Image: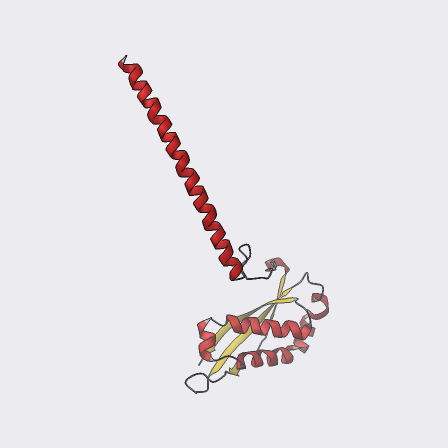
Length: 174
């Protein structure tokens, strides 16, 4: 008799445990849905896309095998915009351009001879871009804003996006 009573007690506790577990799962799931909805609303307000790395634009992936590089041979000394201290500052920079070899315009513009012929124009765009920034602005974001500015200017000059990335081999601000 005691074994049957103990079995019934264990069964009752098991059912109570199952009911409590169900209630907890339902409450956690509904809270999780509400939290996801709030985060989604905040992302919409901030105009962010949760799937991509950047807001509102598709990031083109170019494999290393499909990338050609063009190094601007000369190291450039470029005057920067005067900062809060009012002193003249300069950047010493070496620039490399990454080109997508699968892009339609690569055959037209991407050849080393074509890039060498346009190098002085590209250098001019780089100098103009650096001239719009102070030393503090460049140091604050490690030159990312300048890279993006240079990239946009070069893509506008060629009226093409076959150049997809600008990198600094070395940069010194003073």
